[in-house]
Image (cartoon, rainbow over all chains, first blue to last red; front, top):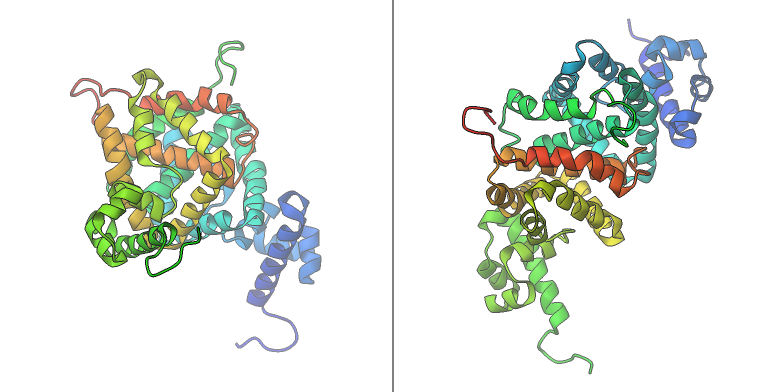
Length: 199
Length: 199
């Protein structure tokens, strides 16, 4: 049945919520925006926003078409042996880039972040509160080290998939994992006893 | 004295050479372009291109307004104790980002590379032949490891100076060096005896 009449169909409602979300996040930043405010701007009930998208974090991921839900990143960190956390994160991240739609979404994020301070600020707030803080807390490591892991992953993607530097691009995932996973494990290793290392 | 008459002044000649260089690199790629071809396209003697810029590599750096001459990177790798190569590279790179004009040039490179496959290809060819290959040869390490160092540095810059993720941005250079230099040293460490590691 064709959708007609005064009430917009679910697709149009979804789009209206996403448009309102983009406007609210841009105007108030990630910490300041609320589901209630997004619902009001879209002219819908907050319960409908929850129904379509879930949490504020998931509204953000959908509104900015981000390539990965932070819940998956946190799950990759937490679910499995500590000694393999680097490999789990790396395989999740490399897997995202091999999906064409995720790769395109990452590229769009790189482009908007390097072209706009506002986009960079939004991504920063989101990364800090929804990803890095949680990873650091789950592993009990300093936030600086969680941020360095994120930085290394982003640089690896830039070099391997965007600039396509050799031999990074033609190396297999296994070869990359063999060299890089120990480095990520090192960044995320349990802290040495107090006094042994300043950071 | 004002420059008048038929012969263009040095500034205009310089600009004509740079414009010809950009066109030649875009048309032929980094390996295919030559000083002779650039000079012909600019309508000048090849000796004049050498006089203004030096090598083909230096013409490329000037034409694309790259923030660093690869000769400086190679010098940072070679000049000094092997055990401190990570720290030397890191301090050179962090220093470049604190100079506003270098930071702007890096941002422009990020933007053009994430927006254009042709720009990405040119940067790739240049990095491989002018930077990574030489670093790998100077240290006798696999090219994959030199590329991973470059990838980590680029990601660090993206996170610290573009997205401005905390606590990376407010951390001091010394704090960054304390955690990251050992990682770069690990990537660039002398190879273990044959058979001990596949990469």
